[in-house]
Image 1 (tube, rainbow, N blue to C red):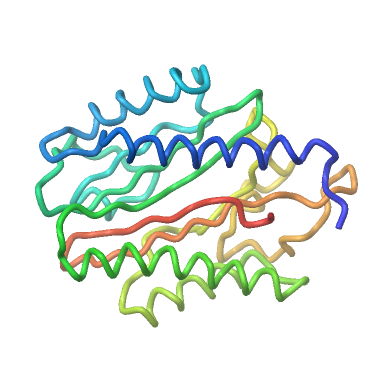
Image 2 (cartoon, helix red, strand yellow):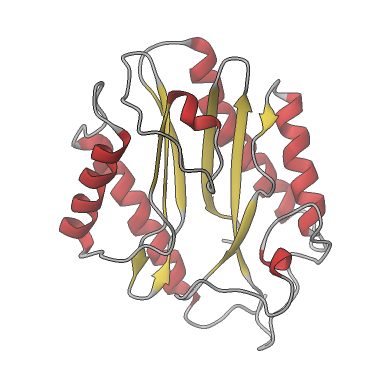
Length: 227
């Protein structure tokens, strides 16, 4: 399949983002009592220390507890992390003018439901990736509905109006025309492998956001779909 020659820079950006997340765990930055804003600041300093990152193509998302129910566009109150809690991180650092977008869920304590949710979002991402890989004519809307059904099968609800978006060179890649075509959205019926105006296949991010509104918990897993 014909991708842009400099696509390797996009893959490298994701690998660096994964290394950043691993370092967050190694340095034990996630500790009970810390606030969302303080953890975000610590990670911002770490990213600068490791890679000199100053720019992010989207706001840094650090969500604890009940805030994990909320999708990207929300700006909730600043919570502190509890002893037996769930959280997710969603960061879009820019490495040498190439975007990364990575999201992960972490659990403090041994609550079996929170741990199941953390496992389910990762497993479901991998299942959706396999579904994409096996269907060369898959549309954005079909993948969205597949992900929503995965949530139901695992006894969760899907927590967002879309489950992914375009990714690429900064500034954030977009398709000219309808904004909806930049998202893996139920109203986007174009094929995910549709070529751009230069004849290259586009790269997409896949987002899994499962929630339980009664228990006030959510889980999130996000990374490149098209590698």
